[in-house]
Length: 237
Image (cartoon, rainbow, N blue to C red; front, side, top):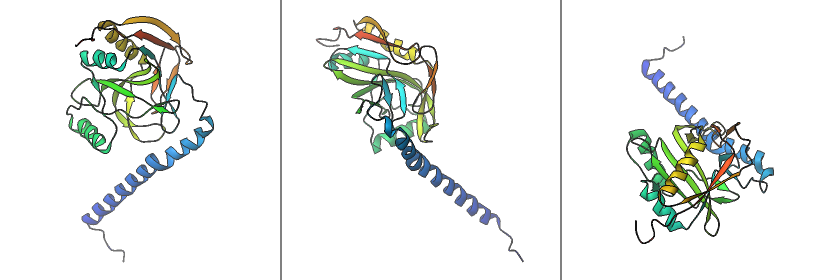
């Protein structure tokens, strides 16, 4: 005679099943799938487009859409004067803090951004501006120093937290209008005495749909906006 399962037995079975699924997801998202992507993309290392960012798995990520000219102090002044905050470095502590910010809907204006690479270099700095009460939704721009006082930038908007289409890792999803984020940074620069130096083409097809490293679709006119930072902050804000 088959023994009858009691309610607490079903609870234990459900708990064990849930734990097994979570372990499987964790193994895939932070082990198997990233390794598969790295192997798949390894042949392209050394052929990275210098006007595109890449994830640690060499997946093409957010587009480079800015080129700023000025020193680090001018950057600090321009963004801080507009209410933006410099992002904290990624660490165990900052990862827990941003998770708490999203789950508990509490502010974390200095929340870290994930590392992206131009060539083989991670961003030198990142700035952000929360939209709402947590780090769930935020405007942000990553910056790479490329030559003296020239900085490549990738501006985008985090519209929420979810799973990456490619690796299943927890990530922020970006909004589709990256050109609007680029132009918002440009207005910020001009407001502090900067100047527009026009645009130059990237190698992204204008008007078409593209995907970033998390699988999010975005559209762009395929232009990189150039700005010279102003001297409005020199001698104090």
